Image (tube, rainbow, N blue to C red; front, side, top):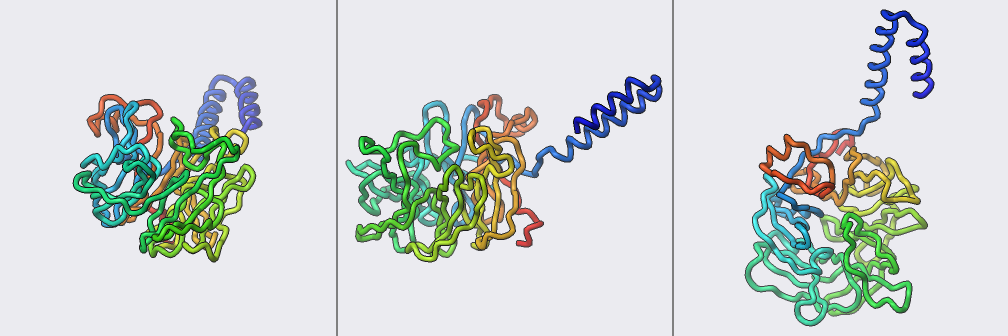
Length: 352
């Protein structure tokens, strides 16, 4: 591109005025067409937007009518239930501090989450409308996060091991909640805790996600500076590596038919020494490690993708919000670089 520009500028200097004008038109068209060719673009649509609020980690309900988000305004953080139809908030589900990294759908009308509400750590359930009684499913111990409830009410959970013996528990979540796969000073294991309380360390890893049939999980595991995707049965058997690139592949989830894995990756423009400078997009890959497909294309940070019953992919992003979009959502003020929920259709070129 630099050679083209230098040659073109040389022609402009040597050419008469009329010829220079034509050359300038040619140069502009060449630069513009090249820019369009490399400019990332996708057909994502903004779903949630509230005044001075951030919404992250969308979790569509099994029935498809609602989804959960981690919502934040100032120092206040809570779990919100919203309509998939238009993104409008329906109710606050809970503002329990441990819910930030631990909420999930038990069924279409109930959620589960970690809490220390009864004087000790436990996995609890409550009705998703935020009202009524709350029930403890299991009493737990240790530095645990990101639980996944299995059909028999056993739990797959991430357990943090301190690398320094003086550490006793994980620090509070960092201000940048986009990164939920790194816990400085700790190593993380995928652990199964049976309903009776017995525990089994399955493997190292982070960000476990349960398959639609409840028999397998997909998760991320670190290897040097890279992080790869793996899948295995919920008893720890049949461990399979899915991705193997010089990149960070994390926050995996399943497609509705269980044939694809959605995940967050910086592989499009990976900077492994300064990962904060990487471009983060949503990708998909077959559970057999084939047919790698990029889903979103944007310089912003896209991540935490989940597929809804409607077939749409829900994800959060800190993309810029235009004035026209703010007016459509009747929002006057948007916090700079705040996250909101977007949706995008499954790409037609995957053969799904």
